[in-house]
Amino acid sequence: MSQDLGERSFYPRRGRVSKRHLDALHRLYPVLGVPAAPLSAGELFGRHADVVVEIGSGMGEATVAMAAADPGRDHIAVEVHPPGVGNLLAMAEETGLRNLRVHDGDAVEFLARHVPPDALAEIRVFFPDPWPKARHHKRRLIRPANVALLRSRLRPGGVLHCATDWPQYAEVMMEVLGGDPQLRNLHDGAAPRPEWRPVTKFEERAVRAGRPVTDLRFTRVPVRHGRLISVASLPGVEAHMKHRPLPFALPAYLVLTLALGGVVWWLLYTGSHEASQVAWYCYGSECSTDDFRGAMPVIGGILAVPLAAAAWPLLRGAAPGVSLLVAAAAVWTGFTDAIRDYGVTEDSVVGWRIAALVVGGLAAVQAVVAFASALRTSGVGNAWRGRRSAAGRVHRYENPHDAKGPAVVSFMDAFETRHDVPVTVRRELVGRPVTVWYDPTSPQDSTRVSVGEPQWSMVGRSRDQVHTRLRELLPVPEDHRPEPASDEEDGATGPVDLAGQLDRLAALHRRGDLTDAEFSAAKRRLLG
Ligand SMILES: C[S@@+](CC[C@H](N)C(=O)[O-])C[C@H]1O[C@@H](n2cnc3c(N)ncnc32)[C@H](O)[C@@H]1O
Image (cartoon, rainbow, N blue to C red; front, side, top):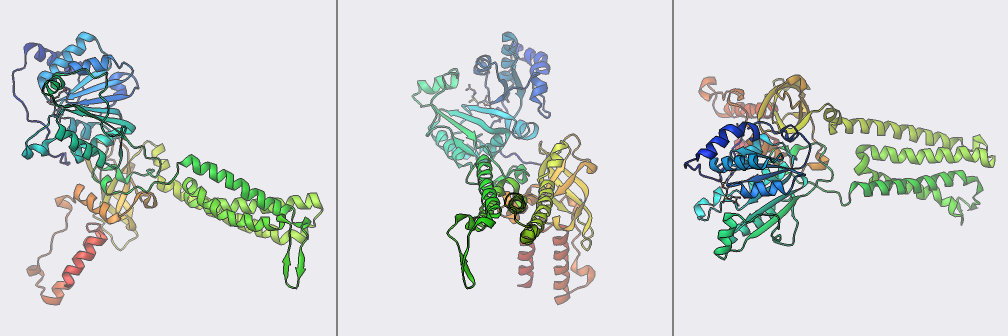
């Protein structure tokens, strides 16, 4: 596996495993254990229910009691200590619980490698090892990188519940959880102690020693929009993304669009329909009227602009076209009905009707083209075919002079396994973060991999920052790196040498191995 998961939060403990626990491990793990393989909770539990993961279930007594009291949800305990796993398995068998399974292993590894993003309703970390010595703090389970991982495995709205009896660790937890932009505290400070959590040996000991127990409950903030394409699908890339949330939720834009659309239609339709009924007073070249119907077309035309703005979050690039189409259709219908209702002659309104037809036609074309392009970049078609998206980088673009050519796209699938797949891509996708759509059942299959642009207008802050992060996470494999030409070999010196180095830099940039910023910086360094 290519991803470094950092310091482990435990020392492998060697201790005697009792006969009872050994027997349970051998006999029951194949039945009640969760294998180190992609998690499908539906298959595991034989139903589709919310899934709760508890990290570090210890000897498992509390876990069994909590699962028994919560039959509507499925519980997975993850523990590295074999006697604890054995004890929990034995108790699960005794109690006959159908909603409890256990994974024997490191929870960080389990979540990173085997649990897909957005899969869990709740993650519990009760009394994790506090690692009180300063030199051991790096081993603490609750640290930013692990929290980002845990949060990514929660579905939006899911809950991360931590409890500790170490006041200093509680402060750190509050800082780390509060520092994650996609987590929100469900309480004002610490949460009340949940009545449903049985008192474990650790909690009992803390209470006896007079240490306060702190509970923290945070929820993953639902991302309301702007995540049609997840460039942020790699852990660590998210930190570099700045989501620019819309000030209101999408339904508010729908209501505003419908209301404004109605007003624009009413103003333009009525203004055109009643135009022949308005009395205008003209003095020289200036005409005026005190009839509001005379001003309606102008106001309607002006309001078409806020209509496009209100529709933008819903229709994106198609919004201006749709807004103009509404306006043009209102004018056309207004004048057409005026011919019928007021006996207005066709000749007198022919200019207006042709203008409405032309504007409406152009607007319709704009809307259709923009809609088709939005559909393409949003990957709706790919999502339909069951493809998943991931952030990736294109490198080894072999024909920098052609608009399209063979290259390699690197990405990590939902289980954080890296894939380097040969693809044919457009040149403009080289050297920038891309969205890769792949078939989760065969991510390596190049015929099922497509590469496209992310929707930067929605999620991107700095392409270079994200690309640099992607380059760290997805380094170009050794055998893909171009051989550095030696100066002695080609006998170049002085300015020729410089030109050669510049050429090599440019070639690396074209292949996608250097970002724009890295290329500019290296060029500046070379040129002094
Ligand atoms: C202090 S005990 C608390 C046990 C239990 N939650 C309780 O309250 O009784 C912490 C437990 O977490 C387990 N643990 C530590 N790091 C872990 C990891 N990365 N994955 C799974 N279990 C872990 C340890 O083996 C230990 O059993």
